[in-house]
Amino acid sequence: MTTAIQNCQLPKLLTRAETAELIGVETQTLAVWLSQGRYGLRCTKVGSRAMYDPRDVSAFLESRKVGTAPVEV
Image (tube, rainbow, N blue to C red; front, side, top):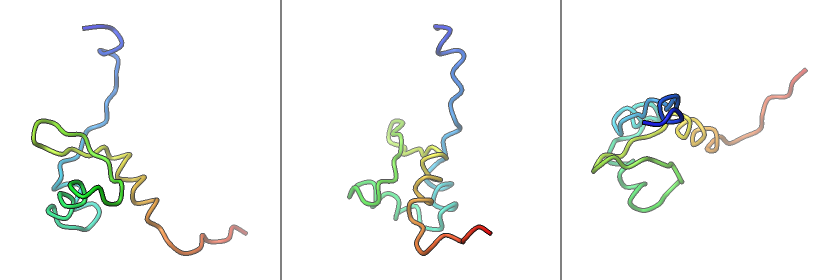
């Protein structure tokens, strides 16, 4: 194993169930989004499992915000 790989700090990937719970949808909804290419929530396929990077989930949620941002005083 090379030094670069040994020193690599990968995020803990979330399961589809964990991701669904975080964003408040059913696991099947995430499966449909993935198969239809909806909403751009990226995942990593590990065998037959879809695993989600918490940073991608956070970016997805941030991109879905609507309305105006609060004004700083």
